[in-house]
Length: 200
Image (cartoon, rainbow, N blue to C red):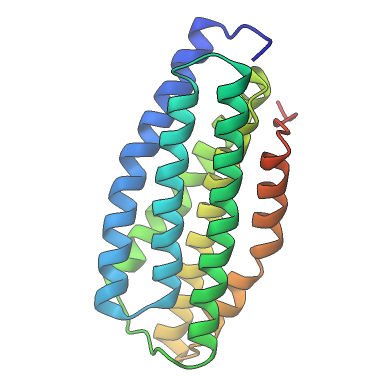
């Protein structure tokens, strides 16, 4: 990278990524366990998103342990590729549900982890976008996008689980999840192109 990063900014980036790694490890484990027990495609997609964001957070943490244009470009490409993988995960899980191959059951554990994620992920995404602007890091921008998408997916999955629990409308969550695909693909493409966040 051509611009020097202030030590305080570097510490903040590493701190935010360490928090992300810890939370995403917990979130992925709980949501996938709940998905297994409830047979919920929405939770499978959400758990897959959590695992992908965990990998992305590790990649960005690695990127900020080094300081070179090569490392930044490679980390940005990896993070962007993970966003494309996330889009594929959402599409597959949604189609499985829409075609009627699964009938999810209510899950209190799943609802609890979705509520927590819906509150935490937007805060992490906002801080990562701010730090991406300060560091001109496309990799961090992509990771911010994944945090934001995780928050959206938590809300969508939560709405789907609650709708299915209360009104027994099983197609609501996969249909809504498909609406996140354009956002995911756009952010993935911008990350692969190496475009940092310009927001402040």
